[in-house]
Image 1 (cartoon, one colour):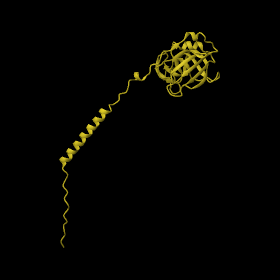
Image 2 (cartoon, rainbow, N blue to C red; image 1 turned 180 degrees about the vertical axis):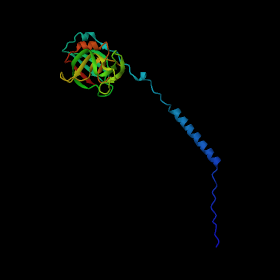
Image 3 (cartoon, helix red, strand yellow; image 1 turned 90 degrees about the horizontal axis):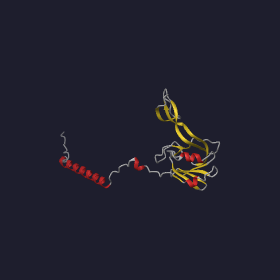
Image 4 (cartoon, rainbow, N blue to C red; image 1 turned 135 degrees about the vertical axis):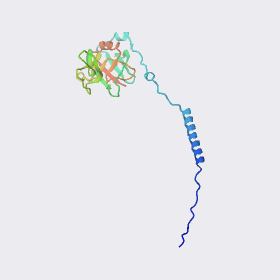
Length: 217
């Protein structure tokens, strides 16, 4: 019995040289396309922080208006959106000053408050530094809520000169208040309203316990 052999069809192998040339062409085309896109849309460079921070206008004080201030006609308005505070005498503005409020939304509360405490040399009970027995800072920027003092150190609260604490009423003592602090040009505090060092004592002198404080947009 004889076997019948069936001839297999013959397919020529691809031309490797031609395929290589094609790949080189595709690669060159892709490079040209990328170069064209980079030319049309150049990479954006991030601006330095100094350009992103808007410089705040300096404080303005009107002596004529301040001379009319009494415990009964003084109030404070804080604008979180403008990062400004206004000491008002009746319907007139006696002081218009830059501030720095809470670094996150909600840290400085909005609403109607009154001054409930005044302390010219107050220190924070929450934020400060751990210092050794020689009062040298061992660890700065700490919070008593989350940090533990290293061995041989104790907590020292951050200075809050000319502190004016506010609350919803005279029986409500919130942690926040107004005091001297750094003003970097944007919200940066833990909730308090920071004031310039030359303006804080003037506002401190004019307000009394019970002075209305409104914080809004």
